[in-house]
Amino acid sequence: ERTSEHWSLVSVLAHELGHHVAFHTELRGNDHKYELEADYFSGFVLRRLGATLDQSLAAMRSISPKEATATHPALDERLQVITIGWTDAGTQGAPRGLSIPDKPTSGAVVANAPPKPAPATFTGPPANPSTRVTGFTYFTPPGEIDPGRRDFARQSDGTWHNTWQSGFVDKSEERGRASIDGCAGTVIGKLSEPDFVVFIPDKGCKSGMMARWRRGEGAWSALGPMKNVR
Image (cartoon, rainbow, N blue to C red; front, side, top):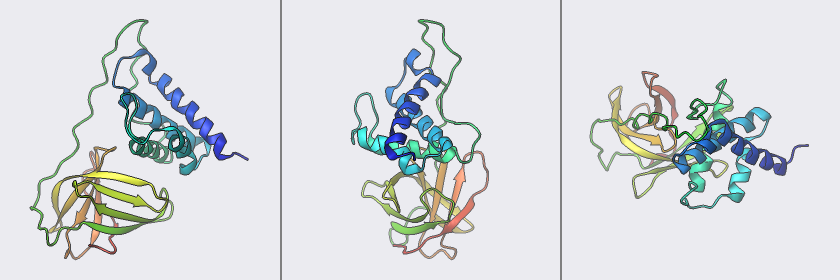
């Protein structure tokens, strides 16, 4: 039987392999960026090998400092990126997100990959404090990662915390306002995914339905109804 200890060891090995696959050991670059790329690779590989999400996160939860250091990102950010890699492994043929250049010649300094596009932002009807949603509950369908209850809550600094049933906290930032089918609302986007956003309709909207949008996909698509809106 493959235990949690087994998967923790595999996780560390997959992380180090990710550094080598992307030639991080031969390039000069952003330490935090390289660590997150290796974290993503680890999550992707572990799911392909049969690990659950919790098993894929276990090693990082036990060895990573909670706060960021000069060389390594904060624990929450690393857990988010491992989760994205694990998710992608169930839907994609190959991992994305690694900036993998041609192998450099010995001693050469290779320029970093082109920067990713700026996070998508939106301009819509201004927020009304009396109707703007600051929290709600959403239930993910079977088949999703950690299915079940998700509690969304707006923080005092304007960020959003999405607390999963397992206790994992997925963090987002506000990207502006939008109007869908005559319904105004707030748009939030994951800190770890600049191209993916969620629309949260204001109180009083008939549908009470969240929507999602990803750069390159075109139209918004429905996600599901919000419960316990406040």
